Length: 170
View 1: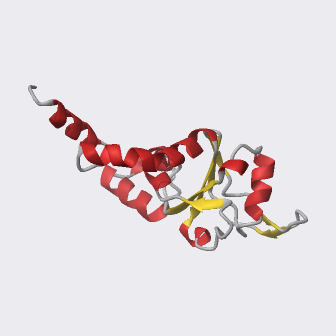
View 2: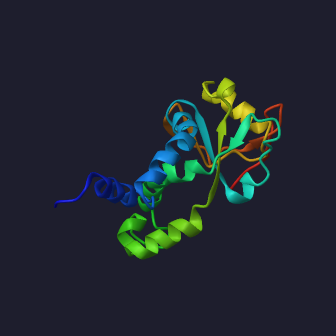
């Protein structure tokens, strides 16, 4: 295939969701903080209904909509491999749904608000991160990425400042 360098850049950009190569260049500066937080800091994905109540007023937790794009593929894989509760054989959703159904259900079931911890707090151990999150949200996020490692925190209970359980998800 004989195309110009710019056309090749456009093709690559379009293949990953951009309209043209120049958008990739512009997005690079904007995405750097999100990428660093995801790979070596702390990122949280809250269910939308829980994320709306997260306190970001002091800048410790920072809302970051770029993280959705950076985590979507990983979360889709988790969703696609989760058991189909309506299937008697408990097969993964990717085996019981069509590709279009799987995409649609993922969009319906996995709607998150994303936050990252500000730099001074980003490298704390999980126990300290969880204690910090409790100061800003009644519920734990569904997922936490801590130094690049994904942790499913959905079933952690809501606790008060004394460690007493005050809420449980079902």
